Image 1 (spheres, rainbow, N blue to C red):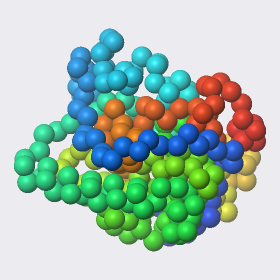
Image 2 (image 1 turned 90 degrees about the horizontal axis):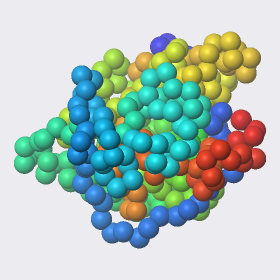
Image 3 (image 1 turned 120 degrees about the vertical axis):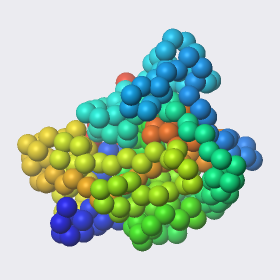
Length: 288
């Protein structure tokens, strides 16, 4: 996209509050585990499709993360993947387990060190208040399956485990707790190099013409059609150069779908409230 569009996107990330917005957060807190889980491979009974992703069959899986509708993420109704429309259109790639490609010892050791560095970030930024004090700003409120996103645009220039461009929380109150990290980078047509090895899953937001932006603020997801976007006073912008990926390295929040999984099975509730029963309507969700 052009420089004007890119500037609008970055401005939107810095000042924005998306259509997902949703000011009434939930705060369930995190456990006090002292270590992070290593990546989880595809579940027993899963097969690998032509797209390289693992698909679970039957009642097998890891913990409660079987793709049978039982996970908090699935119950939230936040559809994932291409063409999805749930909760604003969370197009973060494949939902569920992903196939893990084995690495040699040197690569695994390098990735382990990077993950330890990333985990340290979660210890330094345990709450939204910490994130805001460090220059991160809200770009989306709490969205089931992926959390609330806080961004610091100065870290979009390259991959650095010590400086993720986005921090993910279980709500948008000052005491909301960190659940993971999201690295983001302007990388053109190809996904950037991130964590050592081939297993970090990068995604983009350029389906269906991209996101809907109004004065630099995101007011609609990829699923928003051009007519609805225009009605909101926005324009569709494909983020062709921007790539993002998640790293679930926060204590108490290992993802049973994989440490780099596109979505997190335990992040449920409703937009704005991680603790709400699926199907409930919060005052924040009612104002979408």
